[in-house]
Length: 189
Image 1: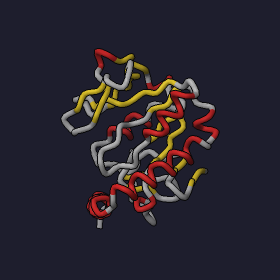
Image 2: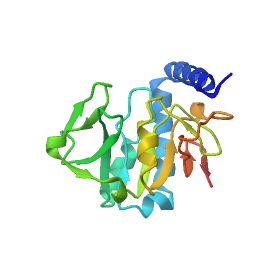
Image 3: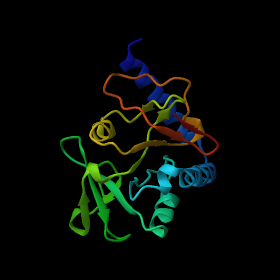
């Protein structure tokens, strides 16, 4: 089986696994994973944090956003651009979001401040699967890999325990996480 076929099989498996999770389980694990992130020095020392607005089946970093705001950190969110790159914005308030073609809540550029990848200290990265070595399997469009390749920010994979795979197949362009944080475990180099 090729790496592309292995990735497709793991994506399919993880999508099915995530569909079977209860909302209660998602909420509990999201809260615990957020608490783990907030306890890390990479979070505590960061001035600008990139988060994401979770899709229904994703681990939700909303509590990280609240903790960041309380400690005076700047919180940015990605916008998926037509060229398959992410642009980064700090929304002016909680109403400054619009739903993208992917169904993701993204900052409304007209009511947000643009930031560069160089300004980020910590990036909380969603994915479909992670392994203990820091490998990540995304949804397949490469948005985050392109962003992660152009920043020196701390790269933190964030997910549910069900998303921990024995081995995530990788290709040369796949960016490795500095740390993977789940509800019960933290895997850092």
